[in-house]
Length: 204
View (cartoon, rainbow, N blue to C red):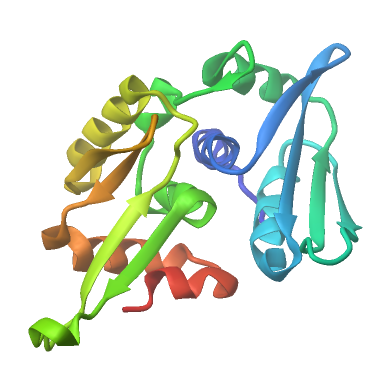
């Protein structure tokens, strides 16, 4: 368990875990937490477990999926009023969006949870045009979000971290693409918070 005594810090981390791969769902008098993660990223789900144990009891279960699907770990948290509060901020019905309050707390540690959950780093090298140095594309592929939610997130990333992102479209979905000029600033800022199993996402 990672002991967190600062309530604002705990709310920040819980909010970004939920806006990433986590979820909070109605259950009885309060909401509960649930997240599934493929087994090779066990260190990430253990990180989340250690944080969320400051809110409620957590249970981590191995889920064998069988070939060709990848085995998973499931993290389940008991009902708690804070989960209900965060659900009211982040969800509209079943739609999981962006919490404007959490964006006020945005820093590189918070961003790391979104990036580990939904980010990607692609390296390009084109020898046919004699490109000596590789080019990179960093994306936040939160394609469940509306254009409006991504616009709010893009604005906060610029204001809080001075990172410029473009909103791109793929089929009917939108996602964020980092300006190449900000690549090193992004990698340097986020790397200390990335778990070992996700280091490939920050390795140039």
